[in-house]
Image 1 (tube, helix red, strand yellow):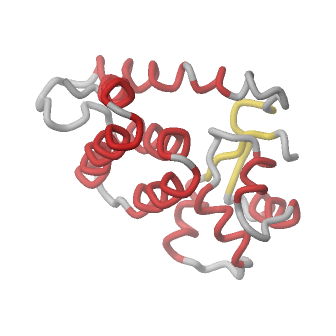
Image 2 (image 1 turned 180 degrees about the vertical axis):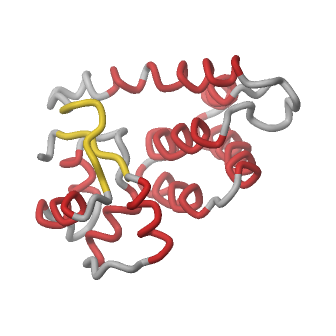
Length: 174
């Protein structure tokens, strides 16, 4: 199971807000950060105290589900699924009406997927985790758009102008 790419389900996102299930701290932390950008085994190694049992608990409750098959163990291959990720938001941006260039042109779902999937890759595990929490708390398109602009700023500070330009392009910003 540690080779699977897992992502939060709608029930998982609802559980983050409601905190209705009696999950262990490690399982809840795993639920907060887990997305399909890394195999489940890598997330287990990043979350202190998280075990396969916590991951199975999340799956049993329907809080996470497999996405896109199993990931390969070779380090070069996990980056291969990421390459199309910016293209998908860019394609969504091309189909969206060009109303404002100050805000991302993506719809709410595409923006959520991009922000939650790319935050840890762009900002690193700790800052990415904190950013992913902010994305989970965003309750509107406007809030996600504001976070997208913050992501561009944070990437520019952390990785420079070229990386920030790539994020701008993926988000449909001009």
